[in-house]
Amino acid sequence: MQVPKWFKVALAAAGFLALGVPAAAQGVTVTISCGSVGKGYNFCKEGAEAWAKRTGNKVRVLASPKSTTDRLALYQQQLAAGSSEVDVYMIDVIWPGILGEFFVDLNQYIDPKVKSEFFPALIKANTVDGRLVGLPWFTDAGILYYRTDLLKKYGFAGPPKTWDELKAMAAKIQAGERKSNPKFWGFVWQGAPYEGLTCDALEWIYSYGGGTIVDAQGNITVNNPKAAAALKMAKSWVNTISPPGVLAYMEEDARGVWQAGNAAFMRNWPYAYALGNSPESPIKGKFDVTVLPKASTPDGRHAATLGGWQLAVSRFSKHKKEAVSLVLYLTGFNEQKRRAIYGTYLPTRPALYQDPDVLAAAPFMGRLYDVFVNAVPRPSAQTKKKYNQVSSAFWTAVHSVLEGKATAEMALSQLAMRLERIKGPGW
Ligand code: GLC
Image (cartoon, rainbow, N blue to C red; front, side, top):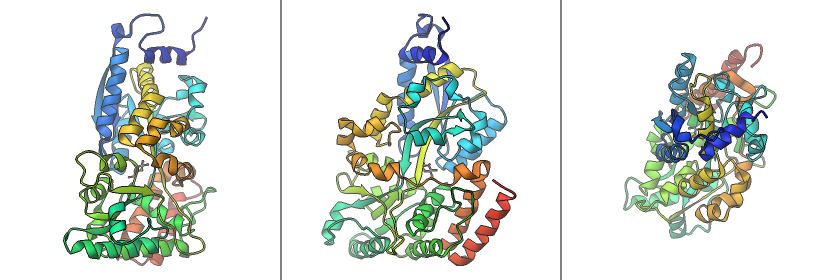
C-alpha cells in the first residue's frame, strides 16, 4: 500500500519515521528564519527546539530584521539566488503573491483535514494559483492599547470610541502627566516610512470610509476626500499628542515609550499585550486593549488592519520533508496554544479562541474575536507581485503628509497617478 506523503510527515512529527526507524537515526539540521520583534525570536527558538527534541533532528534558528520591509528585501535576495541555506521562512501575510513561487506547495505534503483546522480566509490568503505556499502561524490585527489607571485618574469612564475622543483624552492626560513626567505623550503609533505605516494609515483611511487604497476589483481608489480627511487628522497628532519622533517609529519604538509608562494610548499588534504584562513591566495590570477608534462622521467605522505570519518551505530546501514536519509542529494546536498564552500571539486555528486557558491568559481574544476575523486586508491579493511597490508608494505619500511636506490632497492625487503607472495595463 502506498502511504501518503502527509502521513509520513505526521509520523515524523510524532517522533518516528514512517518505516518505524527511530527519527534520531536520521536526524538532519533544519534552518528556520524567524522574526525578531518583541520576544518573537525566543518563542520561535523554543518551539523549534521542542520539535527537534521530539524528532531527533536539529534546528538552526536565524533572526531577521525587525522591519518587515527589510526582511522582504533580504528574503528576495536569498530566494532569487536559489539559496538552500534557509529551509523554513516566516512570511508576512502580504507576501504569498510576491514570494509564492519560491515555496513548495504544501498541499502535496499535508492531510486536508489539518488544512481544515485553520481559518479558511487565512488558508485562502496563502493559496496562490491553487498552491498552498504557507501555513498560517499567527494572525495579527491593529488594536488600541490604553492605560486604565490614567483614564480613571482623569475621569474617563472608558476608552475612546472616536478619533476625536482619543485626541481630547490624550491631550488632557498628557497635560496632566507632563507636570511630573516631561517625557509623557498622549498617543504613540508606527509612523516610520515602511510597511507598518501602511498598516496604520489603512486603519485611519478605512475608519473614515475612505476605502483600501486599491479596491477588490483592482481599481485605485485612494484619491478621495475621506482618505484626505483621515490623513489630516493623523498629521494633527504629530507634535501635539504624539512625539515628533513618531515619524521614525516602528512597532518596538512605540512599545518602548508605552511600556516605560510614557504614553496614555498606543496602536500596536497583540504581541505587546503579553510583554506589557510581564513581571518586570512598569505598566503590568494597568492597561487594557480595545478596537481602534472610528471617525466621528456618519461613514465612521472601526477598523483593524489584518497582519500575520505564515511558515513556508523553500523550494531550494535540501530537507523538505523535515521542514514540513517542523511547520506542522509549529502551527499545530499545542504550540499555538503555548504562544497564545505566553506571547499573546493570535492563533490561526478557530478552536483556540474557545480554549479556557487561552481566554484566561488573554481575555481580549474572546472579546475582540469579531474584530480579528473582520480585520481589513491590505490590497496584496489584487496587486499580486506589485504589492510592495504599491505599499511603498502609499507609505511614502502618507509620510510626506505627516512631515508637512505635502498637503493630503496633493499627496493623494500624486499617489493615484503613481499607482496608475505601477499598475500599467493591469496588476
Ligand atoms: C506585523 C504584521 C504584519 C505587518 C507588520 C508591519 O508584523 O503582522 O503583517 O506587515 O506588522 O510592520
